[in-house]
Amino acid sequence: MKGHRAAATRSSRARARGAVIGALVVVAALVPATATAAGTQEVDAELPYLCALPSGKLPAQVRIQAVFPARTGPGEPVEPTGVTTSVQLPAEAVADLAALGAATARPATRLTVGVAQDGATAEATWRGTAEPVRLPGSGPLTLTTTGDVASVTGNGEGDLTFSAGSLAVDLALVTADGAAAGTGALTVDCSPAPAAEREPLVTVPADGATPDPDGPPASPGSSASPSARPDGSEERQADRAPEVTPAVPGGSAADREAPPCRYDDAHPSTSASLNAYITGYTNVAKLKGASLLPLSCVLIEQGPTDIEFFPDFTGGYLTQHSTGTLRHQGRAQTPPFEATFLTFGFTPTKATMVLEQTGPMTMDAHGETSFLTLYTELETRVRVPLVLRVTALEVNGVPLEVGPACRTKGPLRSPEPEPAKFPGDHLLLTGSSTHQPPDQPVGYLLSSGGQLTGEMTVPAFTGCGGGGENLDRLLTASVSGPGNYVKQTQGQTCAVQVFNPDECTEDLQPLKIPVPER
Image 1 (cartoon, rainbow, N blue to C red):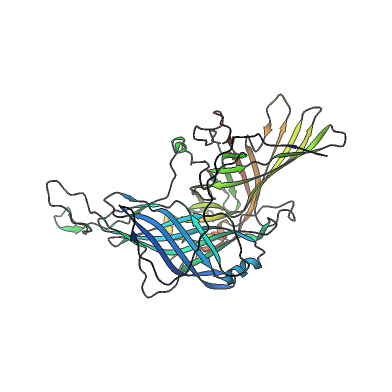
Image 2: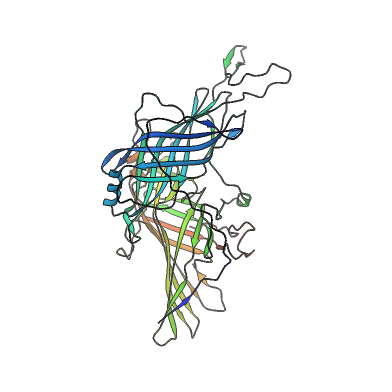
């Protein structure tokens, strides 16, 4: 016999519409930017790309849409809005994904955008996410992602020019029965198709430097003026690259030195929604050190607790299935974090990294309770596929270019006690709790948080290196391997549909910020 104890009823909120799945088409022509509302200009560009899939390089079509300001002034950030990246993969690509057993694919895109001003250049990354898309029975696969992007501030007086570069499409692949397909994740690396001449996406004219009220006005787009050397001669001011600032949603969490952690239109809450902060440490066995896991946001959909009664009805077996998603700037990932080690025992190495969620996060609790003594034991297992991406690397004080696609070949991998039920590579963390009223619970509970531990293997690295230098073997030899202990701490959750000032801020973010423990 089974009983059912539903989660507490919470007032429902209006659900916002999900991300729109649009067309991503490869077309040889580039549609130039056109003027829209006063003070803005609209980009709608269709570009030919080549994408690397298991069967080889295939042509793809990429459509980029955004709204830019009509002009920019000195020190004014240029913040594109309404950014949409659409990709259409051909039928051959669909066959490759189907061969892995995939029925749906959840895309996340990383578009490298070059920015130039007065001969100086910089790169920004435009990221987008979308809900899972079902693979078509025939024909091409269309993926469309949206998301906030970095702002760019010029350091010169010339126009700012934006150009599309390489594109990575991270796909979380799921079978028809909800299991991970293949390794659960596939990154499709795409590059612009060869073209005789590539037009920029858009040029934002500059108003020039602020004129001196006592001097002649500066002309728009003028070059940097000479400056005097100490010896009296003149030299031209060095052109400085535009500054790229990652997108950071505003909110009171910034005042608390924590990243924002809230539900929004792109990820609306339900009556069972919780959010919480997580942090911790992971050992890197090869380097005989530990790396701090950054304070991160996780959005949780708590499932109901089921009870299967003992034959004598003196207690029962408890089970609960919940799901979660990492959330940072609209993406399923942690914030960037740095770690410094002595590579090979003597060379100081600093890496900037991000953990990207490439598939479903599941949180399964099971245990027993006694109706006679009221004593309860629970064990919770959290499973999540995470790919480790390296965004910057410095060895002995010298920066090494890792490129935009440096990452582990697959997700971090933990020993799985139930491989048939939970296939595919993923990180597995376990926490347990006991509860004997009237005392408070001891240990980890999904709602109140606590510590989760596990062990994982770091896969080999791929796609690392720029300017012809391959860093895959260096990172693999330095970091990859088994036996890496993980200790994660989750804070008290905030039930966003039932405001509790002891658990939530006024804007429904988690009030409790956990402290990492080794």
